[in-house]
Amino acid sequence: MEIPGFKHVYSGKVRDLYRSEDQAFDHLVLVVASDRISAFDTVHSPEIPGKGENLTKMTNFWFQKLDIPNHLSHELEIPEVVSKRAVMAKKLDMFPVECVVRGYISGSGWTEYLETGAICGQELPEGLQFGDRLPYPIFTPAFKAELGEKDENISFARVVELVGSDIAERLRDLSLQIFITASQLASKAGLVLADTKFEFGNDPRTNILTLGDEVLTPDSSRYWDQALWEQGVRDQSFDKQGVRNWLLENWDQKSTPPRLPDGIVTGTAAKYEELYQRLISI
Image 1 (cartoon, one colour):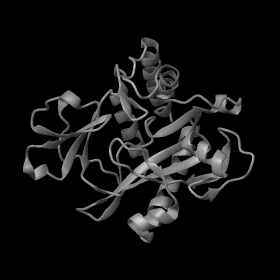
Image 2: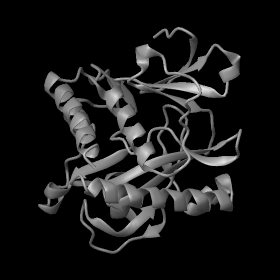
Image 3: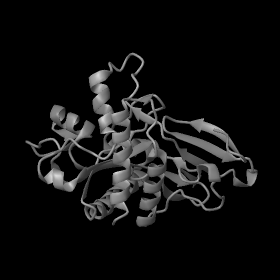
Image 4: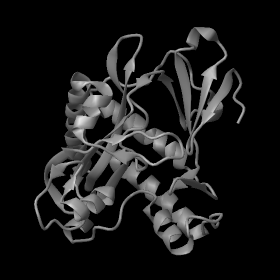
């Protein structure tokens, strides 16, 4: 997409980055959330209508709720053509750590627990079942891989090796603090925040540890309906799980992926919209 006054600099699986042609704003980046859907490290078609807009609205919602320095900037107006699905952000020196926090056991954490009885080296009680609430939220970091590679779960000691003990402790403590606050707020909307991941960087202009990227969206977090969870339903979430489930049944993850059925596309779009509507009721 061409955006007047901006130059395209990068495209990920879901987001597109642009910089202003005005050198005075070279410290900023325009982050545009597309409607592209990614699963199993592959972008699929068709796109999910409204996905980019909902991701952006949810990130902005949480930035307003959290009293944490974040990467949003109001120095430059967002172009009208992408105003509903873009943010103007400060460039950060990002730390190579995915700050994952889990309050419930699921996903890759469940797989690791079954194999080792622990997640990222943290021993957990025996006999946990999928979707169970953990005794307390745990910090289970991952090394942020290069594009096209899978992130790798790592120990806290490895985080210290990557960023130093002071930053490692601050990343852990801040991630747990945000998770607990967000979980309490989500519960008011009848939602369980099972797990999430944060990304932080250093703002080179202020030297302040800053929260960046998307925050507490269904692309970075696992939300469940609290009433269903209490009934023992642990395999539903407000995200692209329906896409993953369909692909597991219909794609070998080697050949060209098949086109997603209309029902999967509309159902996924509805999940994103429902989550946003429930969150803003807080």
